[in-house]
Image (cartoon, rainbow, N blue to C red; front, side, top):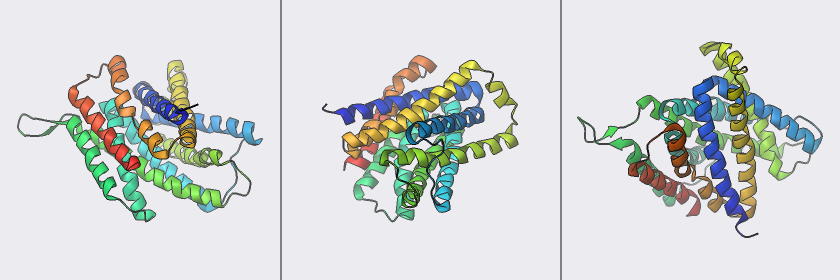
Length: 308
């Protein structure tokens, strides 16, 4: 079938849109830490079932201690710090603006890869960074009462959103390093498409530990106990987990098998545009020409990373 990879990639963008909307609703209903901890536990549970069905063992393939440490570090940065910031920004400024700022993640990943892996930053990548930043600026900046330019969103929400994007980019590079160690130290044969799922298991272990510690020190476990009795909250947590780590990640791996990675990555980056209409329907977040234009320019900036 023609354009299978492209269709799957668009499906991934819709899947991540659903994840963002569900996460905003779940964060406001259950609280940031409660929802995140639930997601980590549910992901580990689903992962064990998948491993058992496909490999006969509920645990991931064994690898070196070094690989485990890198994946755990990736989980600490990407899940614990990154998702905490992301869900907090959803609470303050909403998932529509949160996803717009997540277009900064490729910029962070490129800079991090330059520092740690020695990967070259091409002139087109610098152009992509400028275009992406311009798209965000068009959306969130406007004329103020006392200044020519003024931030139109709460500063705390913007800072959490930037922190989430930075952590996602850094966590992605750390995850790549960890998977390289993981693959080279495997003691058993493992299908290539399953490697990210096995490696992600240890990222989720770090996420579970990290969110448990944060909850213990910040608010105790009463919100978690209350959340386990909230049927709608549990359904939201399960749905968020399915659309994110399972359908989203699995389909993204499948997409690059049927089309070029650059095309797949660009189509999967359409979330900031797709989310505008459902965010209006569900959360009554207004649609403006500035928000549409800014999201479009930011997505064009992301596409420059992968297509040029």
